[in-house]
Amino acid sequence: MSKEHYVVIGNGPAGHHAAFTLREKAGEDARVTLINGHEGGSYRPHLLPEFISGDISEEALYVSPLSDYGEKGIKLRAAQQVVALDPKERFVIFDHKEILSYTGAVIAVGGRPRIPEPLLAFEELMTTLKTLEDAMVWIRRLAVVDSVLMIGGDLTSLALTRALLKLNKHVVFMLNEDAFWPLRCDEALFDAVGERLTAEGVEVIDHGRIKGMTRRSEDLYDVTIGDRRLEVGMIGAFFGLRPDIRFLSKSGLRMERGVLVDEYLATGFEGLYAAGDCAQVYHPGIRDYWVSIGHDNAAALGRIAALNLLGCRVPAKVSATSIFDVQGVKANTSWWTEF
Ligand SMILES: Cc1cc2nc3c(=O)[nH]c(=O)nc-3n(C[C@H](O)[C@H](O)[C@H](O)COP(=O)(O)OP(=O)(O)OC[C@H]3O[C@@H](n4cnc5c(N)ncnc54)[C@H](O)[C@@H]3O)c2cc1C
Image 1 (cartoon, rainbow, N blue to C red):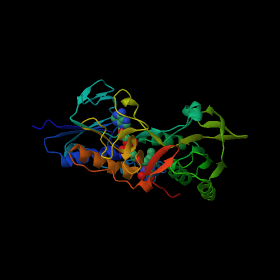
Image 2 (image 1 turned 180 degrees about the vertical axis):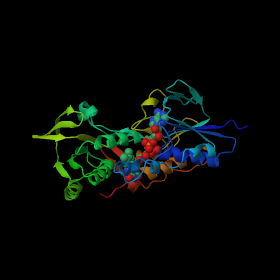
Image 3 (image 1 turned 135 degrees about the vertical axis):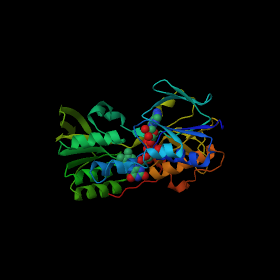
Image 4 (image 1 turned 45 degrees about the vertical axis):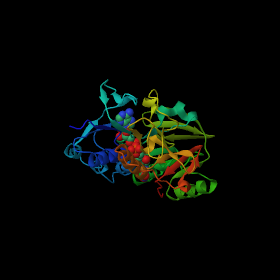
């Protein structure tokens, strides 16, 4: 029996494609374990706004039925959180203290919502949208509130704004310098999006600065933006995603914004790769690392990491011209949503 045990941490687009590629290409005797912090199988985060607006069912979010994992010979460990990884001894530790050894692994833990420093004091009052659980919170709250203040924003916020308008909510959108992260936001884009949002019926506040935020009741918030005081039922915060790699802090892996990997997605530790939103990938052309953003990038990187873990030499090919600088971070996105 093969001693190979491949472990994929994370079942978003990167992890899903890594695990299914490993299953397909590794020998039948190899074991493949897919660890997933959330309940259930892999779902498509980019469809969450349409789920919130009621356009699609929860079932339609999922990439494949749960039975697929067992039938294809992938052991899915759902709702289990990895809290540490030892890349030298090759094992992971779960929050329930179990230790799981691997011969090869792919880290594909994605990102978590980013809240800029000045707004951290109000973090508890703001709702983000990253997971299915977050979407459930939006659905529950939107059943009883009529108005939403969207601050930030990022590409997610535009998709969610569309969903809110469909639900006939009054949307106030506070555009600030972080708007449209990770895209560069110059004045022309700022104006164009402001005009577009206004035409769609959104109340736009330009260059605003939050001075205060308080909760009067479960469904009523006071927000002071500059000299203006607003009453809204809900506040959404949208400033992009940041790699969720806190659990690796003592691992010895090289990390900056994400896990640093070479163009083959290798971490530098034998048998250990990283892919998707959590990775920062070296680009020999620009001699720097780029951050991946978007579903298609994540899925492609997941496949590449799996192939290289199995001994191939597939580089993460990205044209240097598609990498751009955003607030000091080099980024590459497969994602642009028209509003
Ligand atoms: C609302 C929304 C709308 C979007 N719209 C688009 C769009 O229109 N087009 C587009 O291209 N992209 C879109 N994106 C971005 C896209 O979804 C991400 O780029 C993509 O999901 C990244 O995939 P990933 O596999 O790297 O990470 P993720 O999708 O973040 O998956 C990470 C996985 O890791 C698991 N995990 C995390 N930490 C641990 C741990 N410690 N232990 C075990 N498991 C763990 C999580 O449970 C999750 O399963 C959107 C994102 C959101 C949230």
